[in-house]
Every structure is written in structure tokens, then in C-alpha cells.
Image (cartoon, rainbow, N blue to C red; front, side):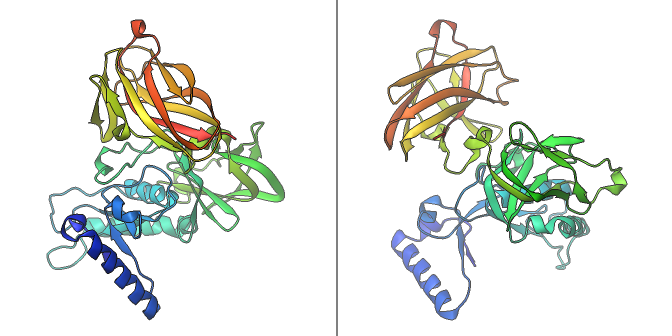
Length: 392
């Protein structure tokens, strides 16, 4: 592996980048060796290589390979620096794998080259977890969506310090062969439902197994979702700590309609791509970019929407409105819909709001406008993103 840290696009011109990549890959092919180039620049990644995030990761499932480079604590020997927790390390690993990524983990040595005691403890605890749950990690592929639950994390390099802690309500999916693994990032309640998974069929041999424990009971509810019964285990009886893998076999599954926005082909309109009309501006709160200061009812936001296929699409937005509820209107493809934005728990805890369904008669690029629906009753709103998911 050739791994670039920084300055690649500034020091090496595009001509030499292409020649370097081609020479390396051709050499590796002639030698029969597996090869890779990791770098931190999306403009290069459009052509080749593995996209790398330092101390961060993707916030969605993507079709291309990517890498997180991070550390147990300090990059090198700095005894005053804090170490991460075992739980955080395991949760981050599971989140990465479910999104089609890999983890490159740094262990900073002592001055004499030995592994610090704190680092050794973390590695052994990670190893103990993998002994129980490794089949849900090694050699797996992502499922149709990366997971479900209230906690969203990631979003580029150096985003780790801004992530919220996961809970047992957060679930990540991986697959291997005909098995689907649902990994809960905490010990779940006595019963939980896989909201994102639709059970289209279940064979006579369909079963759910808690890795390290055994088969557990389940049922399929009226919405064709799988409901899993959690065994009543004392803390000392748990198969592991921090995250728990449930293995589903014998089911034919698809994405439940409620999870369409999490599929890789869903369209996401990011704040940084919007054209702001009026006094609106881009800001970053707790590591997440959003468009704020929207207190003027005459302001509007504009996006260009690349629609790859004609059809009916669901739209939703992620907003915060700390003062009071408000109302927004969306205009796109000669159609308009309005929706209430409820009062949120402060500016930094946005909520998803359905913006209705829209029909696109053809593929193409469309102009989307977001504006106050009732200017006379307008209350300030922050906009984190707009999403479109194809229904049919």
C-alpha cells in the first residue's frame, strides 16, 4: 500500500499523479501482487485509489472503498494524551465496516518501542470481542443500508471528536453468504424490531442467533419486520461487552420502505452545495455543517438536483427550530409541497421532517427551492440537509 497523508494534490501535479498510479498498478499486476493507494482527496478518488479519512469516516454507505486512519490514543509517545475507550473503539469499527470502510489503527509505542499498558489493554479487549463476533466483521460486505437508529456519526476527516455516543437503539448491518448480521451497539431491551429490514420470505429453517450465546426467538410483525426477543441474561452471562451481533439466516430480505433514505442511491443535497439567497450562510455546529441564521422570511435556498431516473420520489429535510415550530415550502419540477418544522431541542438536535412526494417525468437536473411557507408566521430554522429517495 502507498499511503499519502497530505499535500498530494499541491506537490504532485495531475500529470504525475496519473503516471505514478499507472506505474504502480502496472508493476503490481506484473508481479502478481495486491496493491492499493490511499489518499485524502476526492478529486483523485474519482479515478482510482482508496479514500482515507484521518480521525473521521463516511456518514453513509458508499459503493467505493474507503479507509479510516485513527489511533488508540496519541499517534506517538505522549503519555499525557488520553486514550479512547474500548466501547468507542468497537462501535467505530462496526460503524466503519457497515459503511464499506476499513480501519487502519495506530498504536503509539513507548520511547523504547514497547506497547503501552493502556494500549495493550484496549487491543486485548478488542480481540476478545472479535473472538465472539468476528464472523460479523471479517470477510463481510455491507447490506443494502448501513444501519438504523437515532445516532448519526461521521462526516469527513477529523470528525471523531464531535460524534455523539451510540446506544443500544443504534444497529449496524453486515452480510456474509446468506447471513445478515444485525449488530446492536449496546445490550438491547427485552424485545426490539429491525425497522430497516423487510422480511419478504422466511423459510422453515429461518432463525436468529445471538453470537456467543445461541438461537433466540423471533417473529415477523404485520409490517413484515423482524422482531427479536432478547434473552434475559445477567451481566456475567453476556457473550461479550459493548456490541452484540444477531445472525439472521433463512430469510429473504429487502429494505423496508421506511429506510429508503438510507440507501446509497438516495440523493442528498448538502448545505455546502446550496446557493443562499439573502442573509443565509453556511456554519458548522458540533462538527456538522448547516445553513443557519435563517431569521428573515424573504430568504431562500437553491439546489440543483441530479435525478438519474424518472419516477416518484419521497423528500425529507433535516432541520432544527429552537424557538418555535415553523413551516417550509419546497418547489421542484413544477410542484410545491409545504410541511411543518416542529420545535427542536435546541439548534444542534435537528429532526427529520417529511416534505411529501414529487413526480419526476424524466431524468435530468432540476432546480429545487426551499422557502418559508407562511412568511408572516416565520420562525428561525437551521437546515442540515435535504434528501430524495425513489419510490417507484
